[in-house]
Length: 230
Image (cartoon, rainbow, N blue to C red; front, side):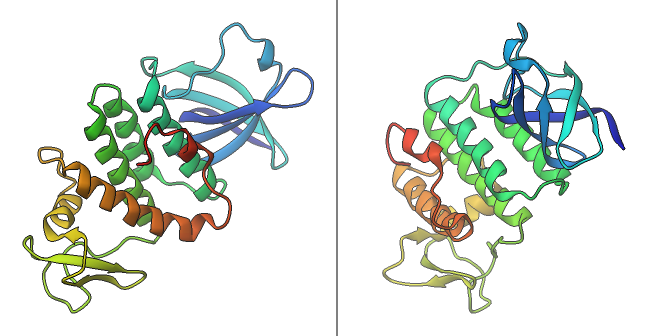
């Protein structure tokens, strides 16, 4: 019998379950991604909110355990428009790529900061934050890359352009589209210098290439919601 009390968590997905219940996916600080049954919650007058940290309690014997209680541990966030889509996209990445009950406490903190920051940032800055979140997620899963050296072992130079070689790294190339300056920004997770729209698209395409390798043939539903393809 497993019994956990008041562990920090974010709700990342919910859907109808049998009777009046909900099937709930949480990203927790101590237990990673978990799926719980919320008994009778489809009729609840106080529904659980996404993008708000809470403390949840759950128990059970089998793989699918039951949510037994929760309390808000954070302010509610009313994400709208593209900001909402950014949050949904991050949630879907976590739901798709993390293994059940595999703790990632550092990524939990990265996600928490991401949610807190996108609420009050401009559109271009929100996109940059999303790229940094993707990088942290990939690194946590063991698919990070060297942002300090190219494939030849030389230091990345800001005034040189590179191309990305999967599972190898960055290679200097006269036809490359990835600037050394952008790679330096990624390394520093620089929020003071946001890349221009062209380099943000380059970064988007780079991360999409890396993520699609893990996602396989099943595309992310949230990608289709973006107002512009970014």
